[in-house]
Length: 183
Image 1 (spheres, one colour):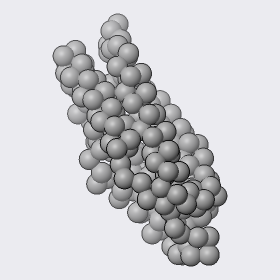
Image 2 (cartoon, one colour; image 1 turned 120 degrees about the vertical axis):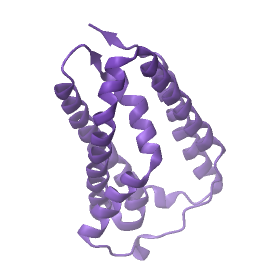
Image 3 (cartoon, one colour; image 1 turned 60 degrees about the vertical axis):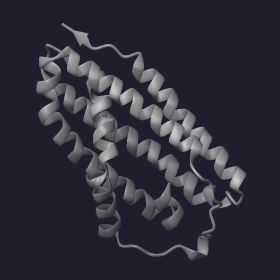
């Protein structure tokens, strides 16, 4: 949303491409060690699962409690940024963000079937995550580039924070219902 707000839809969406490239790099780091842990220990799976549930719920509560300030940037005030710069900014953002590592550690195990080949599962998960991010973030970027600049009051921003906070908490509850599949 930040890129859409700052640079408009076209440039902002290039930032999304960078985020997905960074997401794949983080995914690779996570799955290299994660497969061994999941295959070896149902206890480790459950620890990761419940840590993920707690983390998502924490994100939701944090969003609810975050300070809100009106957005003040206008269409004519958007800075220009190069294609390589905005893509590399997205890649870097995911590579250095510890939250994405924790998030992936929490989410990936939910979709793994133990006792079956991991490579095809990881490929399906990574492609699904990338496709979903590209589609969902297109919506966020478009929203930010068109609508978010209209969030001029503190109450409007607070409402948006509460909506996103609630979505994080709902995701935590849904994540809590997942069970590890054994074959």
